[in-house]
Image (tube, rainbow, N blue to C red; front, side, top):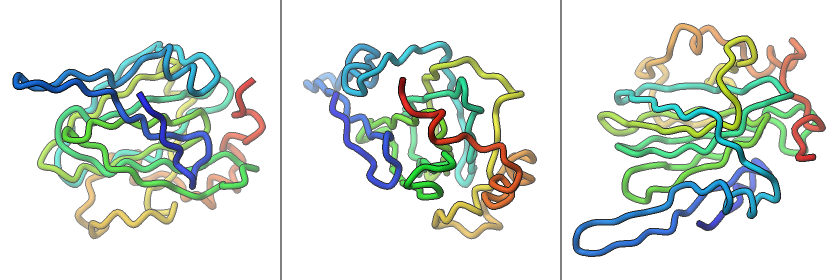
Length: 193
């Protein structure tokens, strides 16, 4: 596995899997905790795995968990294609508010590492997509926050009226409102110890 830094959101990476192909197809290692931990210089425990299946035009996010403890994620698209976006929501970060889009699909089989304090969203660009998440902490609804995806400067490439959002995501505060509310993670709290 190789890590490719995402320059707009420091600490975030694309994971390029080791792929083994032969006439039968291919096998790949899309995640190894030991290798990722070695490359990141920190342990990457996996305490929960999620699978999201969505149709074209579904936009999920921008989601982030309170820090501490935060929630790091390894995200990949196992079927279909998505425009995956990481947004630096760490107040005090030199790259606060910047975002990095990455295409995740069932062709390249890449994944992304979303560190604690970095917001995550994706837009389904195929007829259907299955997105798998490996999470460093378990889901805790009282610790999860949402920032409206239309307020973070991402060019989604789809008219806003064509996007399908959950009620919660559609009603989420803007990035400016989240800053004013004082509930976004602080950069210093997100740095590895």
